[in-house]
Image (cartoon, rainbow, N blue to C red):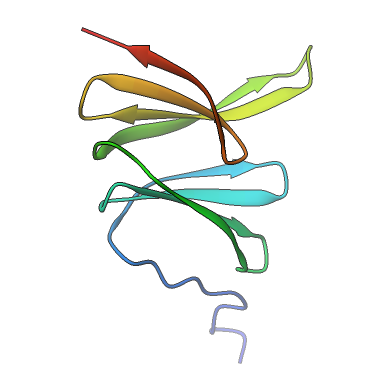
Length: 93
């Protein structure tokens, strides 16, 4: 049936943000969690965050071939993740 989705991912809470990163999809959820899935829906990793997510964005530096996910949190921090590795934390005011 062409009306049914070909791939489906079940989340543990309400999605807050979604970013496509290379061949994976990174989803931020309301229960302070960040998940990554393959394009076929297989879970790659999960990270627990220190605060709720307010927004997410892709950081794409084409000249350096660098892609990462920026995650803004309710505790005024912005986390930069390259895959599941936390690269940087910036505290905002």
